[in-house]
Image (cartoon, rainbow, N blue to C red; front, side, top):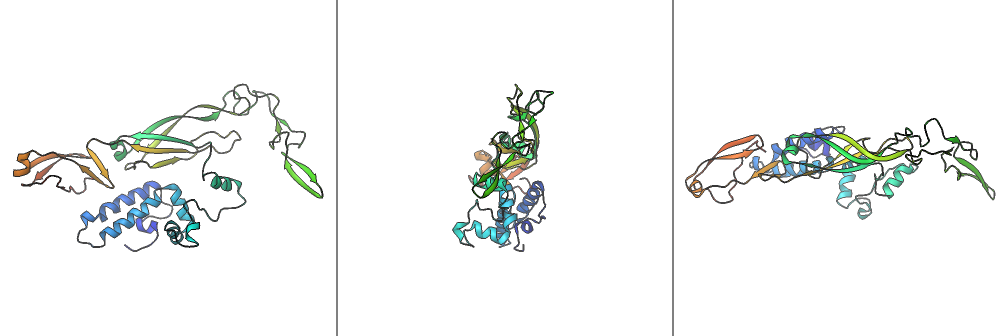
Length: 310
């Protein structure tokens, strides 16, 4: 496997979806697993490269930073080297538009934080995580006020134009020899004056209420993996785009299957007779029980690999 960027390592293009990245990773992980490539001295190294690439590209925030910095700069940043080393940390985001107040405030106040974004925890059984499923999520968030249609004023009325700033939201202020524009203090920069407010939302245009979203969960989702559903969060009172929904997956422990990366471990109890003389036993797998031949003189904690059953 040639050493390249993380996309090359997984064999996907830079526009690959999260599902495509996950599929490529699991395919390579099975192919390059050291247990299946004992004759290849490079197998473990290749396997580690695939894992390293997947750890970055599966995480939306890490992937965005990786795409922005480029492969070499990102690795130097993570490893503490390059351009001063220590001055670059995990929260360093270069090349932002310094004139974008949204970017500035997002970085200063925990990048991406927005009170319209919604974070929920979704609990799955082990088999739901393996096979994929659809979950219906209901959560409390900001919704448009139905009484006023999100206008903030009673039906049939409209906000009036602010006469102080004539609807511009700004007024001219003279300070010494300088003439500057400042936010109108009368309408707070909105350009509108509301004399009669909606009694249901108290003029806020939004109310708190339940929202229901269907979440399609792909097969093979990992524990603590966070899925982002664009524009499925809270409503913005000023008519801007709604927030996003962040669903963090919590996979319950299974009494039988123990996931370890792409592999599945299962404990099987043998009788003394079976351990000494050998025989056959039923072993549970993700697709049903399989018959396993037990060799004579099997030792406690001895491992047997069932290929392509992970």
